[in-house]
Amino acid sequence: MDNLEKDIYFHVGISKTGSTFLQNRVFPRLSKITYIPTNKYHRVFEEIKNCGNNKVLVSIEFDRQFEREVTLFSIRHRAATPIIVLRKHEEYLASQYKRFVKNGFKGGIEDFFDLDNDKGFFKILHLSFCYQIGVLKEKFEKEPVVLFYEDLRSNPKEFIKNFCSLTLSGIDLGKVNFNKKHISYSEKQLKTIRTVSKYFNLKKRVVFKNPILNLFWRLYQGFFRYSILYLSLVIPGFMYSKKPLIDPVYLKKVSRHFKDDWESCLKYKNYDL
Image (tube, rainbow, N blue to C red; front, top):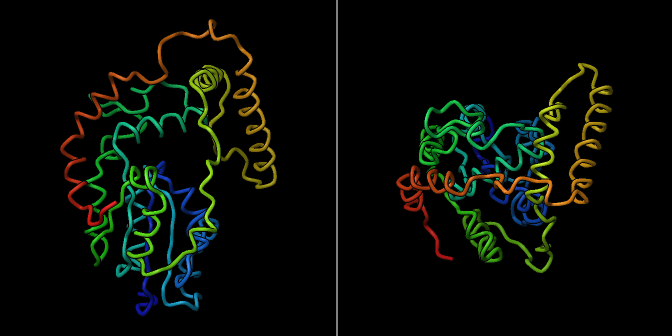
């Protein structure tokens, strides 16, 4: 194993739990610890090896690829301290579904996550947070640090202070930008992009082997996608079905199904906010 003398903290996300805010506005401002940004994760082991600081923070977002990526990292750095941020299952599912719809997913919520038959794009295992905690416990020598998105959303300054305490780092909160980055896309925008996706493939994917051609394709596709999102704002509301993008009854069903899982996760909370 490399760098046994380094104290490594491995923040694994998960997606849609405030990771972007932390990675862009908080982690780069931490003192007493070196943060390896997400754009360097493809060479993370080299970055850790060459880091002059003996305390390192690595952060990346995982969802469906969680176990595979965690395993790959732990093979090299089993002594790292894993950190995971969790969000209530129904909120996490709704946020993930909206993200994938915006990026070209054309199915309904039950095509995305099939609670009854587990044939959806996301599997039940991907929302089994105790299982994910168990993976971290198995793959790393140190107990995982479990944090909660609700605490970050309700009291971000205290959340950050607690994170610094856990990682023995520091920060000047006066230099952190707490303004909202953007407002979420509306139901009307997401319904429009989901409808268009049935006729045009808007999924983010590699199309050309040539990176230059693929870059131009991504730029074109991105322009097309965001044009649809913003042009939909001028479409009269009466042209849309009153049926919600995500059935609230289904989200309640998801919440009930994962009730025990969530309560078990809360037992890992070892801080007060």
